[in-house]
Image (cartoon, rainbow, N blue to C red; front, top):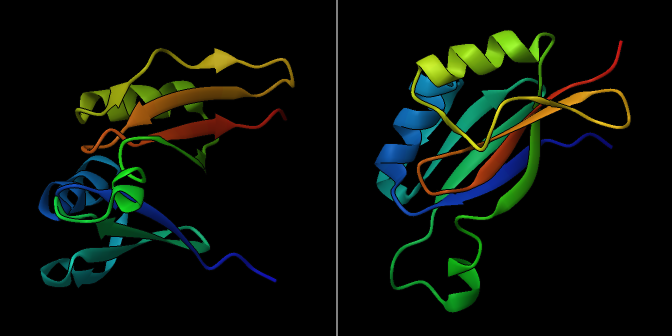
Length: 122
């Protein structure tokens, strides 16, 4: 099996589209923003960004603005962190070395979803 897609839920699809394309520099594969979604290329996995409207059920609302469990693997977390900060990405703090030998840095998208950068030990 191969993971083909991961989903992130947002409150404003236009802001999210700009954030993922411009700030994170992900390639927009499908612009379905008029239908409430966009698909970005994120390596071998697509990142599907989906709108949760203000009238959506409470269970759907709970999907927005949370820790997503998604991580972008990078070779140089310090350089990537600085590049994204310069692009306006909001981080919870500087990259931190982990007990398992790698590094993590957590950032937020325009809907408050938390996503991580990860640098695995060499």
